[in-house]
Length: 445
Ligand SMILES: Cc1ncc(COP(=O)(O)O)c(C=O)c1O
Image 1 (cartoon, helix red, strand yellow):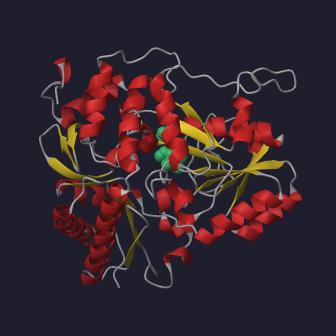
Image 2 (image 1 turned 120 degrees about the horizontal axis):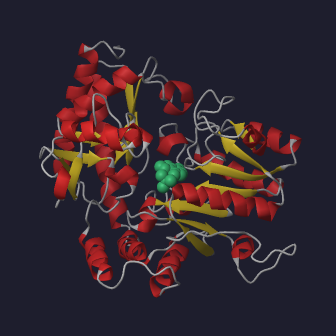
């Protein structure tokens, strides 16, 4: 990559030293720090990325799951090249946003109408506003541990303890807008019955944190029934699952259609962007010609870079490949082989651990009782309880062997991962687990 000017040729350590003096906390996203300092990456292609020292990693972070086609897929690169030369940004309506919206509409069952936004966080922010406006009820029911981005209305409840805000700076008044619930249909119904101010339900349909805490498919069906019974707007957050679980997301795969869907990452071809899709009577509230209660538009929604043409170009190119279903066949098959191979490694090393996951994802749970019963019976708190020092040993153990996961629970595959990647990945995994054993950080059988 053409690393320009001042920072060309610097090592990760040297960059980190400079970063701490220039960037708040040295990073641009909480999770990008890894002690003692993070590796800096400057190139990626297909299933691989390279750090500034020139080391190659098999990548299972894949741009936080945005790169379903692999890094720099030729169709996406071509689209970016062509459109960069034709003007990257006009802040007007433009033809490509129409093509992009039509593709989303074709693929995602609930997306009768689409509105583009800047990110997944913006997608949930807009969806909640529209859902509140439609239901005319202020409160939102959300699930323990589910992640919906970083704005004020979704951070409470994203991690335990759920009665405590996990971030400073969120007004106490937000508490009154949220009802935080476990993924249990009876408990959802009890809350909906008791509190008629709840008008919206939002759910991360993979289960919390891209499926590290699995969710029952049956529960999603139950949610649809309950949302109808109590006249709530049901939002499926498909920022991760959208275009990954199937070309039409998890909703198309399991045949449960929500009222609204939030999307980002793959929907924008791995570029910065997001979308809200929804049933027409709900999305009509965003029509600038519609007046409601003397307000026109009825809902304020702006955003300079929404549906930016250069992003739309990449998105259209990517969704055309997504539509074929080929990326899913390949990525699912490789992820299944990795899950199976990881379990064999755990068995061989006699570690109390379990590999699991759906679709093109894999997760590992190290912990007492991991092998007993089904992974769905393990408490969410236990599944996400790996201690910081253990996860640093593990993550660094993987990285020094040339493999990078999305988080300490696991990773995602893409169209670009092949059978040739499986062996080296499992070898690196075995080495990292051995590091954990040597450091006495995990339970043996
Ligand atoms: C399910 C889910 N919703 C929302 C978001 C927020 O998306 P963004 O990081 O684009 O703001 C994420 C990010 O990973 C996510 O996984």
